[in-house]
Amino acid sequence: MPRIVSFHYTLRDPGGRVLDTSAGGDPVTYLEGAGQIIDGLDTRLRAAIAGQKSRVEVPAREAYGERDPAQTQRVKREVLPVEGEINVGDQFQTGPHRSDPVVTVAALEGDEVVLDANHPLAGVDLTFDVEVVTAREATAEELGHGHSHGEGSCGSGCGCAG
Image (cartoon, rainbow, N blue to C red; front, top):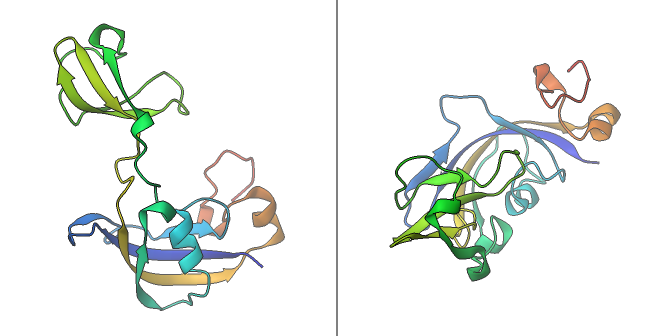
């Protein structure tokens, strides 16, 4: 039966550089198998128990995937939905909807901009230092809604109380 798991983490790249952490904040809470965290981490935490600390290695293909050269394209500057100056490394959403892709400016070449729609961590093997805070079976209601209902965590607008 799927579980609701809460954990703290520190995420590092292959060079050991800290990319993200939940230290000092709330733990991440997710429903196993619901796609709420990257697949490789979800799979590796399936047997974890509360209080367990571990280092979890997730290869790129099980995290944000391998880099896809087809996700890079060259466009004219004037067609971009961005006002003002653009710099290499800038990120922006390609349209007005939350589901529109986010792209990164990879290069500026005259009146053209090279955009990369790969996730910034595509192609990167990741290391998570994880401490499991809680792990329990999901309720039938949580399974039906696809997320945790503990401590008011239902913020998805599904209409549940919480």
